[in-house]
Amino acid sequence: MRRGFIRSFLSGFLIGTAIGALAIWLSSSERRAGSVAWRQRASQLAQQARSQGEQIAALARERLASARGLLETRFSAGEQSASAVRSATSEVTVSTES
Image: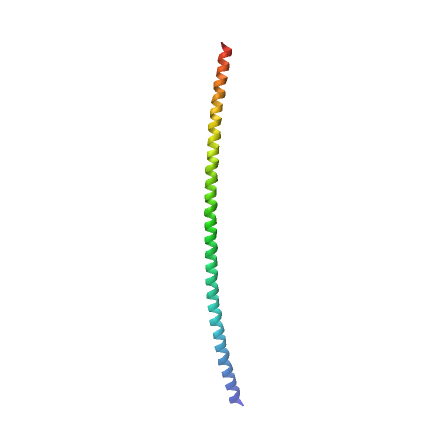
């Protein structure tokens, strides 16, 4: 009886150890495959974010240049009208004084 018990125990232990080792090996390779997939996905998302950031930056530069041009146009027009108003005012003052 003792021999049968020891044989059963040892064979069960060896089979259990082999199955456990196989399960650990499979799960670690799945984890590696999963981590590779996660790294690829993260890299993809980073590339998308980078390209979107570049697009947003280009659009912001474009709008900033447009706004600068608009402000320069308005200020130059404002300066021209201010100088016209100054000259008209000086003409009026000159004509009232004489």
